[in-house]
Image (cartoon, rainbow, N blue to C red; front, side, top):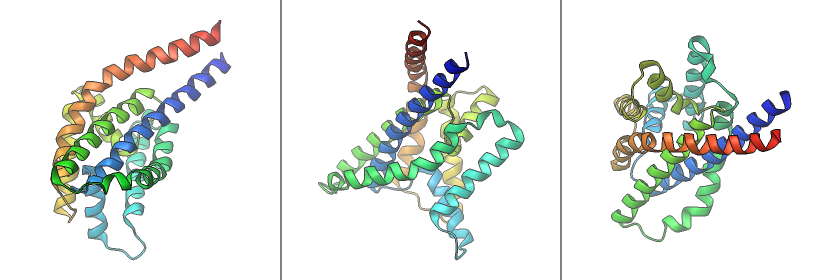
Length: 220
């Protein structure tokens, strides 16, 4: 039984890492489209610019906000904090850096606004799809995504609706503090939530089948 539980956790972590990789491919396309920062990073950028402390960088502020979210959840409902939450924090940046290195030549092919909008929308869809794999792996979710997940669970409201509201809140607060908002920010705010809401049940069934197949085979 113990061996079975360990295998279940390992499979879920592998699924999570696959979803994280897909999601950050979308983030990379979004960044390379250069049409604006995603909603959470508008908040990070706004706080960074407001604090303007010598030792702070955008990345450090990002980590501090994520740690704050984790701290709040540890005090309110620690069941949401799992190994995947820490993995998302640790590996998100390096994955984006790797994809950026690979895809920058593609982004340089054309700077036409239509090409950039298509890249931005494609990035949003891929981000939403990968994010739902991470969520449905049940191995943990990135701190910024947990905000919408927890609110959706606690209020019993649709995830797609809650995601739009939380993204708009990130944008509003970040913009008020001096963060940059562009067309891509708006597209991301209104696109990711509904697309994620569509893929969540599909990926739940897919992941359940994968786990049942793998763990069922292990029992035989």
